[in-house]
Picture 1 (cartoon, rainbow, N blue to C red):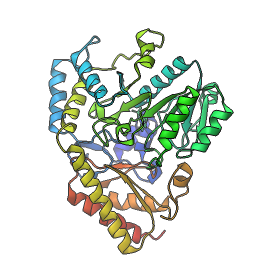
Picture 2 (cartoon, rainbow, N blue to C red):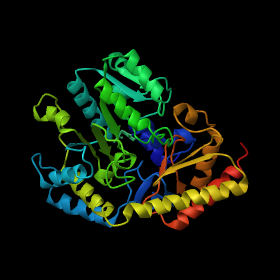
Picture 3 (cartoon, protein in one colour):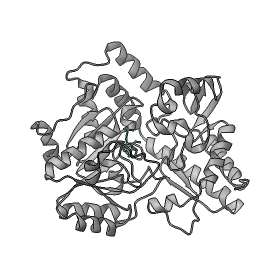
Picture 4 (cartoon, protein in one colour):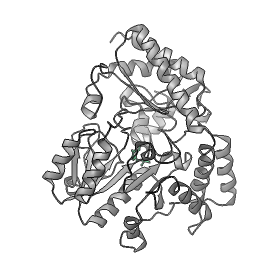
Length: 419
Ligand code: PLP
């Protein structure tokens, strides 16, 4: 064991402040990183690794992009926390709100978890109900109300049983399961919370009509529809992915990208729901929420994302990677899913004749191929997702050669996998 890891374990449970970083699900020791630039992470020994995780999604521009680092440095020199109104906060809220008609008002928090918590609280206050319908395999943070059930990996000791009882579960891409849940909990469900593109059970795309069905059912039942866009917000287009998917939720959560790699979350939506904050009927606050440092990093990031052709270029890179993986896969006669949307992608080791629609389809895959892939890439100087069900990311700093090399290596490793 590396001495740094041993030292970390002494004072920090699992050695890190978030569980997947420990790399236990890929049977490896974590990287101990000293600095990161562009597409590279550099460990404390000076070894460089090409990154495909980018901090679990926020770093769409790559590591330490000049524009964002300079904005952070400038703001740090002028103060990191005012504890009062600041123009940067208003500017970022306005810019995010301007990306979709349904984002009438916004508020900032410090994490995606807090953003989801706040929307659920609002939905319950707005409807006078307590139930929350969520989808097996979705992830919305680590607080009681949105914990997964029946998943050994989602450690469940210490959860408040009363809060857990408010959770109602349905299957992603399965409208009938949503209808059943509403029938069984008639008049009890305050909100349906969903990742419009599921990014926490590997990568599962919504089937045509599924999100529109959720919209229709929520309207009929008087429930609040919440799109959790902590990963997808500003990842696939300049704004929420709902702009691409053609369904408008009532409330939306953001995180990750909008903070330019600093701690952030945000939520927003219909004025008549957000008004509960104005009327001070719902308490939501945070010492560090909307702090100028995060706002400056977010604004600098959005400046770049708003540039002409930014998302088209990311899509080109994503398509290049997908085409290269498919070409090598076909040449070797291998059978697995390579799922991609824009700059998010994942391998799912299930035969292509089986469609991937929900958690059970993803959970059915063997783990050995990914363990092989992870270990092979680590040796070759790549940093991949430390869990088979985490998707990976391309950034603006990922060059075409990396994508070509990655595709060839991935298929070669899988083709020679003794498992
Ligand atoms: N919602 C989704 C869809 C997420 O992927 C995550 C984290 O990955 C969260 C919420 C929680 O965000 P955070 O880790 O910033 O609390």
